[in-house]
Amino acid sequence: MGVEMKFLGMDFGCAFGSLGDGKFPEKDCLLPLISKLLGYCIVAASTTVKLPQILKILKSQSVRGLSVMAFELELVGYTIALAYCLHKGLPFSAYGELAFLLIQAIILLAIIYYYSQPLGTKTWMKALLYCGVAPTILAGQIDPVLFEALYASQHAIFFCARVPQIWQNYSNKSTGELSFLTCLMNSAGSLVRVFTSLQEKAPTSGILASCL
Image 1: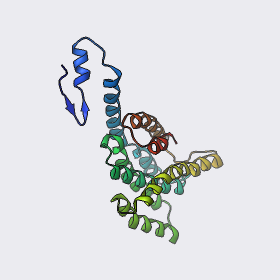
Image 2 (image 1 turned 45 degrees about the vertical axis):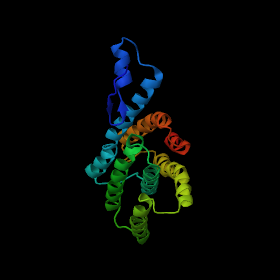
Image 3 (image 1 turned 60 degrees about the horizontal axis):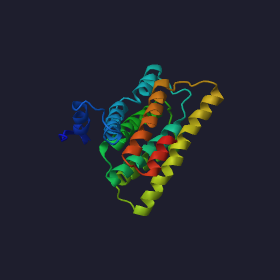
Image 4 (image 1 turned 180 degrees about the vertical axis):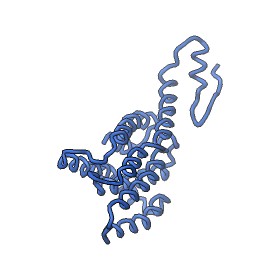
Protein backbone atom coordinates (compact mmCIF):
# COMPACT_ATOMS: atom_id res chain seq x y z
CA MET A 1 0.00 0.00 0.00
CA GLY A 2 1.46 3.36 -1.07
CA VAL A 3 1.93 6.08 1.46
CA GLU A 4 0.66 9.53 0.53
CA MET A 5 3.62 11.92 0.48
CA LYS A 6 2.65 15.18 -1.21
CA PHE A 7 4.68 18.38 -1.35
CA LEU A 8 3.97 21.38 -3.61
CA GLY A 9 1.56 19.27 -5.64
CA MET A 10 4.13 16.48 -6.11
CA ASP A 11 3.27 12.97 -4.96
CA PHE A 12 6.42 11.16 -3.85
CA GLY A 13 4.44 8.31 -2.28
CA CYS A 14 4.29 5.99 -5.28
CA ALA A 15 7.96 6.53 -6.15
CA PHE A 16 9.24 5.91 -2.60
CA GLY A 17 6.77 3.03 -2.20
CA SER A 18 8.12 1.28 -5.30
CA LEU A 19 11.73 1.87 -4.30
CA GLY A 20 10.96 0.58 -0.80
CA ASP A 21 9.67 -2.64 -2.38
CA GLY A 22 12.85 -2.94 -4.41
CA LYS A 23 11.14 -1.97 -7.66
CA PHE A 24 11.76 0.85 -10.08
CA PRO A 25 8.79 3.27 -10.19
CA GLU A 26 6.48 2.79 -13.17
CA LYS A 27 6.19 5.35 -15.94
CA ASP A 28 2.74 6.56 -14.85
CA CYS A 29 4.18 7.33 -11.42
CA LEU A 30 7.60 8.66 -12.40
CA LEU A 31 6.86 10.95 -15.38
CA PRO A 32 4.37 13.25 -13.59
CA LEU A 33 6.81 13.55 -10.67
CA ILE A 34 9.74 14.38 -12.98
CA SER A 35 7.54 16.87 -14.82
CA LYS A 36 6.65 18.67 -11.58
CA LEU A 37 10.27 18.72 -10.41
CA LEU A 38 11.48 20.08 -13.75
CA GLY A 39 8.67 22.62 -13.72
CA TYR A 40 9.79 23.99 -10.38
CA CYS A 41 13.43 23.91 -11.54
CA ILE A 42 12.47 26.09 -14.52
CA VAL A 43 10.63 28.47 -12.20
CA ALA A 44 13.68 28.68 -9.93
CA ALA A 45 16.10 29.18 -12.84
CA SER A 46 13.82 31.80 -14.42
CA THR A 47 14.49 34.16 -11.50
CA THR A 48 17.97 34.83 -12.92
CA VAL A 49 17.64 34.01 -16.64
CA LYS A 50 17.80 37.64 -17.79
CA LEU A 51 20.31 38.71 -15.17
CA PRO A 52 23.36 38.03 -17.41
CA GLN A 53 21.86 40.29 -20.08
CA ILE A 54 21.08 43.03 -17.56
CA LEU A 55 24.58 42.87 -16.06
CA LYS A 56 26.24 42.89 -19.48
CA ILE A 57 24.43 46.10 -20.45
CA LEU A 58 25.17 47.77 -17.11
CA LYS A 59 28.85 46.80 -17.32
CA SER A 60 29.32 48.11 -20.85
CA GLN A 61 26.81 50.96 -20.44
CA SER A 62 25.79 50.23 -24.00
CA VAL A 63 22.98 48.50 -25.90
CA ARG A 64 25.09 48.10 -29.05
CA GLY A 65 23.72 45.40 -31.32
CA LEU A 66 20.48 44.92 -29.38
CA SER A 67 17.12 45.19 -31.11
CA VAL A 68 14.77 47.27 -28.95
CA MET A 69 11.78 45.94 -30.88
CA ALA A 70 12.74 42.37 -30.01
CA PHE A 71 12.67 43.11 -26.28
CA GLU A 72 9.42 45.08 -26.56
CA LEU A 73 7.65 42.24 -28.34
CA GLU A 74 9.02 39.74 -25.85
CA LEU A 75 7.54 41.79 -23.00
CA VAL A 76 4.12 41.80 -24.68
CA GLY A 77 4.33 38.05 -25.25
CA TYR A 78 5.17 37.32 -21.60
CA THR A 79 2.27 39.51 -20.46
CA ILE A 80 -0.29 37.71 -22.62
CA ALA A 81 1.06 34.23 -21.79
CA LEU A 82 1.04 34.87 -18.02
CA ALA A 83 -2.44 36.39 -18.12
CA TYR A 84 -3.81 33.37 -20.00
CA CYS A 85 -2.25 30.85 -17.62
CA LEU A 86 -3.65 32.74 -14.62
CA HIS A 87 -7.06 32.90 -16.26
CA LYS A 88 -7.06 29.15 -17.00
CA GLY A 89 -6.01 28.28 -13.44
CA LEU A 90 -3.02 26.15 -14.44
CA PRO A 91 -0.73 24.90 -11.64
CA PHE A 92 2.08 27.32 -10.75
CA SER A 93 4.71 24.76 -11.76
CA ALA A 94 3.35 24.91 -15.31
CA TYR A 95 3.78 28.65 -15.81
CA GLY A 96 5.53 30.19 -12.77
CA GLU A 97 8.60 31.21 -14.76
CA LEU A 98 6.46 33.61 -16.79
CA ALA A 99 5.90 35.80 -13.72
CA PHE A 100 9.65 36.12 -13.05
CA LEU A 101 10.47 36.54 -16.74
CA LEU A 102 7.89 39.31 -17.04
CA ILE A 103 9.36 41.25 -14.11
CA GLN A 104 12.89 40.87 -15.50
CA ALA A 105 11.72 41.81 -19.00
CA ILE A 106 10.27 45.07 -17.65
CA ILE A 107 13.52 45.89 -15.82
CA LEU A 108 15.61 44.94 -18.87
CA LEU A 109 13.55 47.07 -21.25
CA ALA A 110 13.73 50.03 -18.86
CA ILE A 111 17.54 49.70 -18.84
CA ILE A 112 17.62 49.46 -22.65
CA TYR A 113 15.50 52.60 -22.88
CA TYR A 114 17.82 54.37 -20.45
CA TYR A 115 20.90 53.62 -22.56
CA SER A 116 19.04 54.44 -25.79
CA GLN A 117 18.65 58.13 -24.93
CA PRO A 118 17.21 60.34 -26.22
CA LEU A 119 13.85 58.57 -26.40
CA GLY A 120 11.38 59.65 -29.05
CA THR A 121 7.68 60.39 -28.56
CA LYS A 122 6.79 57.05 -30.15
CA THR A 123 8.74 55.14 -27.49
CA TRP A 124 7.04 57.07 -24.66
CA MET A 125 3.63 56.39 -26.18
CA LYS A 126 4.35 52.66 -26.41
CA ALA A 127 5.48 52.57 -22.77
CA LEU A 128 2.38 54.45 -21.56
CA LEU A 129 0.09 52.24 -23.65
CA TYR A 130 1.61 49.11 -22.11
CA CYS A 131 1.27 50.49 -18.57
CA GLY A 132 -2.38 51.26 -19.26
CA VAL A 133 -3.38 47.99 -20.94
CA ALA A 134 -1.22 45.33 -19.22
CA PRO A 135 -3.02 45.40 -15.82
CA THR A 136 -6.37 44.84 -17.54
CA ILE A 137 -5.02 41.88 -19.50
CA LEU A 138 -3.34 40.32 -16.45
CA ALA A 139 -6.58 40.66 -14.48
CA GLY A 140 -8.42 38.86 -17.30
CA GLN A 141 -10.92 41.72 -17.54
CA ILE A 142 -11.39 41.56 -21.29
CA ASP A 143 -13.82 39.79 -23.60
CA PRO A 144 -13.20 35.99 -23.60
CA VAL A 145 -13.11 35.86 -27.40
CA LEU A 146 -10.56 38.67 -27.51
CA PHE A 147 -8.58 36.92 -24.77
CA GLU A 148 -8.37 33.73 -26.85
CA ALA A 149 -7.35 35.75 -29.90
CA LEU A 150 -4.64 37.51 -27.91
CA TYR A 151 -3.30 34.21 -26.62
CA ALA A 152 -3.30 32.74 -30.11
CA SER A 153 -1.33 35.78 -31.31
CA GLN A 154 1.45 35.21 -28.77
CA HIS A 155 3.03 32.58 -31.04
CA ALA A 156 3.47 35.18 -33.76
CA ILE A 157 4.61 37.74 -31.17
CA PHE A 158 7.35 35.51 -29.72
CA PHE A 159 8.43 34.45 -33.21
CA CYS A 160 8.58 38.07 -34.39
CA ALA A 161 10.44 38.99 -31.20
CA ARG A 162 13.32 36.76 -32.27
CA VAL A 163 13.49 37.81 -35.92
CA PRO A 164 14.67 41.46 -35.42
CA GLN A 165 17.52 40.34 -33.13
CA ILE A 166 18.56 37.52 -35.47
CA TRP A 167 18.56 39.95 -38.40
CA GLN A 168 20.54 42.53 -36.43
CA ASN A 169 23.14 39.92 -35.49
CA TYR A 170 23.41 38.87 -39.12
CA SER A 171 23.60 42.44 -40.43
CA ASN A 172 26.23 43.52 -37.90
CA LYS A 173 28.17 40.25 -38.18
CA SER A 174 28.27 40.53 -34.38
CA THR A 175 26.07 39.87 -31.37
CA GLY A 176 27.08 43.15 -29.74
CA GLU A 177 25.97 43.25 -26.11
CA LEU A 178 23.63 40.27 -26.49
CA SER A 179 24.20 37.77 -23.67
CA PHE A 180 24.97 34.25 -24.83
CA LEU A 181 24.17 32.85 -21.37
CA THR A 182 20.68 34.38 -21.34
CA CYS A 183 19.96 33.00 -24.82
CA LEU A 184 21.23 29.56 -23.79
CA MET A 185 19.07 29.50 -20.65
CA ASN A 186 16.03 30.60 -22.66
CA SER A 187 16.56 27.78 -25.15
CA ALA A 188 17.11 25.12 -22.48
CA GLY A 189 14.08 26.30 -20.51
CA SER A 190 11.86 26.16 -23.59
CA LEU A 191 12.94 22.59 -24.35
CA VAL A 192 12.16 21.44 -20.81
CA ARG A 193 8.85 23.35 -20.82
CA VAL A 194 7.69 21.34 -23.86
CA PHE A 195 8.01 18.15 -21.78
CA THR A 196 6.35 19.58 -18.68
CA SER A 197 3.51 21.12 -20.71
CA LEU A 198 2.74 17.72 -22.22
CA GLN A 199 2.69 16.11 -18.78
CA GLU A 200 0.54 18.90 -17.27
CA LYS A 201 -1.87 18.58 -20.22
CA ALA A 202 -1.45 22.26 -21.03
CA PRO A 203 -3.28 23.68 -24.09
CA THR A 204 -1.74 22.69 -27.42
CA SER A 205 -1.18 26.37 -28.15
CA GLY A 206 1.00 26.62 -25.03
CA ILE A 207 3.15 23.70 -26.17
CA LEU A 208 3.46 25.25 -29.62
CA ALA A 209 4.64 28.50 -28.05
CA SER A 210 7.46 26.67 -26.23
CA CYS A 211 8.45 24.91 -29.45
CA LEU A 212 8.59 28.17 -31.37
